[in-house]
Image (cartoon, rainbow, N blue to C red; front, side):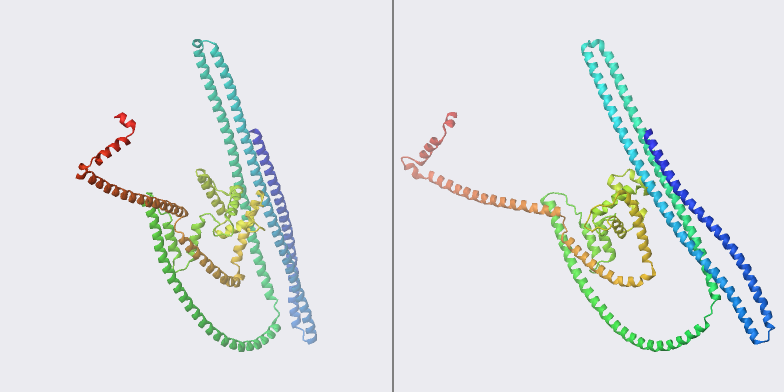
Length: 623
């Protein structure tokens, strides 16, 4: 026990030390960055002060020069002074532009430094998560080994103690047989009582010690889990702080952009270019209006043709849909009658022929499936979703996905084993009293909700992360246990990228093109589900009932043949009985005739003599 506690304490100390080193490095880097920012801010403030003083002086000199220019009457001197004034103003503007470029370069450098800091923080978080996971797994293995060692030790100690007590008991029995029974009876009873008491005390003591060790180990595991939750909460708080800093920098960037725009508006000297562009625009507008008129007429003509073609297509589709609905309704009515007849025959076979209680477990399912699939002969998105849900079950089955059930089950088992720390305490309490199979379903469902896996598309994306680079038929598992958490992280990042791509503004044309493909896929899927529907309706009875009907048919055929043979035998017996009755009547008539009295040897005497001669000796002797 002390060894296990020492190992756990040493592992915790190593983990705290490594995390502390990471945090110290991060804090050191952050302090260095802040010192650099502060020095840069002080330098920038000093530079701005100097620039403001210099600019004020130059502006004052320019303003003072204007009053002197107003008193100059010679044009050449005035032009020369104006050029000098223009050069002075341009120097002031160039100084401002140079300062703006310096600020932009410094802002770009700060953005790059911030991106590097965010990347380094993400690496530190990933490294600490990996260290904590390895520590938890290592301590779990150590505690499991210590628990196994204690159980083996206690079992061995108990076996040795039982063997020793049995040996002593045999010695006592031998002594009892050597002594007289009257003298040794009370001592034997007392010794047996002491032995039983000692044995019970040893059992209770070992049981108490085992429970204490088990409780201490479970307490250690619980403390480690709480420590992990606190650490993850700390990481989340740091992430929120970094997000806040990012927002502050973004606001500052907006302010700098506004300042830059204001300076650019003050430096607009493009009036001549504007005039040239205006003239060119007038010419292009005249040409464009003429082309626009021609294109408008062409568009009107094409739209008229398109509307006519669209109207014809809609009418044809309505006619085809009506015909399809009528055929579907007729076939559905016929199928309903056939299904009812089949189920009625199944009920008659169970109740009348076999004498069994008949239940129809699939009748409600078939009726519901008929109602869902039969809406004017089409399958809506809702009904198809209901069918896929009924076939695949609740937890991300493989009936509607890209991957097989074995692949999905393997991925879910690994996630359940390696990401158990995502389970909430309430979920663990809920799973405590559930059977193993239900417990696994509840735990996997909770973990999938925690990582944001919400539908079949997310399940396919998650499974594809684990079988990346493999064929869909290849079920070879190439992922190590240590890579499960990194793959889950990649799944979350990939899902977020897909979500951002779905709301991007440049996807309008792609969605328009993809809509046609989606409609075609929906139509193909609808036809496929309709074929599956008719196949399922064609097998209304389960395979067990079909086999039962075949067995009943075979038995009935054998019974029919037996009854047919019995009927033939009965008819033959009736014929023989009738012939026997006729022979009896003829014999009675022959024996009762008056002619027999005139004969010297009457037939009755001959029959009596034949009867006596045919009687067996045993029968005569018995009489």
